[in-house]
Image (tube, rainbow, N blue to C red; front, side):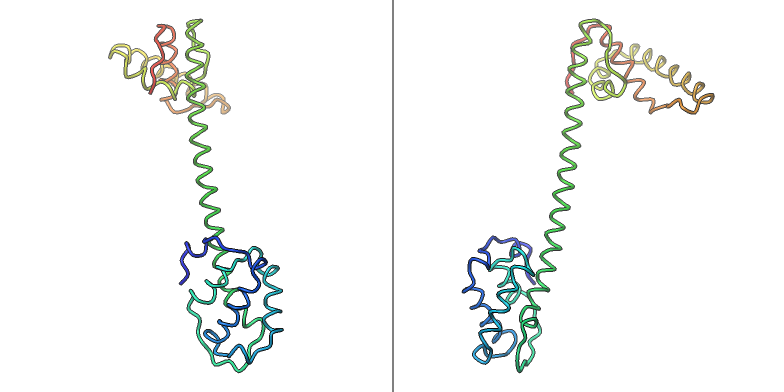
Length: 215
């Protein structure tokens, strides 16, 4: 079986090396199909060569070699050989290569998606950090609870126990009030209680003029 590495190996285009392709055709007709190449017309090989670029765009010399000599092909006792019979192993190989390229593309797209998501998280954190520093000038948090959530951990760890308990109570009361409002108005949204606690932590830290604590 052809390895993925072999399929991806760079090689000269068949368009630029027709003589090499013809040599492979002659060799394949004998070793693969059991028909002596001198019993076949040159027109057969020329016709096969002509359709390669259109039927298999971008195909290379290495692809031709892979198709004939790195795949298991059942040898038959051909009396003669048609153009399509000569090209069948290439067509089978080409489908496998296109499937491989598609898988690689999907993996690359997924990796790019993950990298973009990570970069957005980094950018969001950096924005929240700069907003915290800006908030210190006026002593009041200028952001929201979502920005607070991404920077709150370091400040929470630095709080005394009594400070933590006090902020927990404030956040819990806020959630209770929101639940009451939500029971009366379905448009009122309630998020994870951790967001409300983080918001209180950052508001408190800004009011206390605490320097930014990196995570």
